[in-house]
Length: 117
Image (cartoon, rainbow, N blue to C red; front, side, top):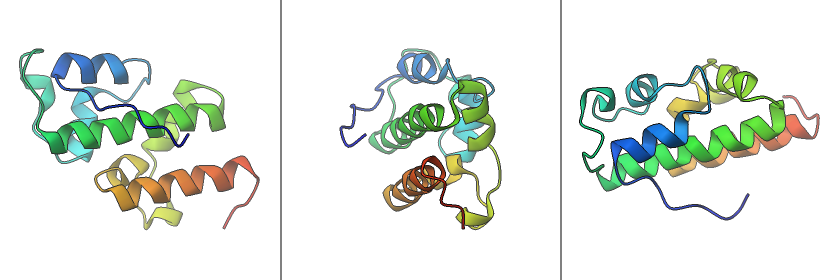
């Protein structure tokens, strides 16, 4: 998962990308990623570069978590959990920064290979 897709540029694109990951909603993602309340904006509203990057990191983590946890629902549940390995933050919250995003990907790799702790 070294290739990174370009981030969404509008609310509609962000919503479509996250739509598959119940119960991760655009509203919840916007709260945990500390971006504008995206659910209240028009679907054609452009995202800032920062919002696009954060939502892109979230989508990539959800995709990877689905590979590791086998279902989108389990991946979304994991992404919403406050994890000791992430300093009691959720993987979604860690996606605010590139460093946090990389930490979440590393944790997913550990889980995939049976390395806990």
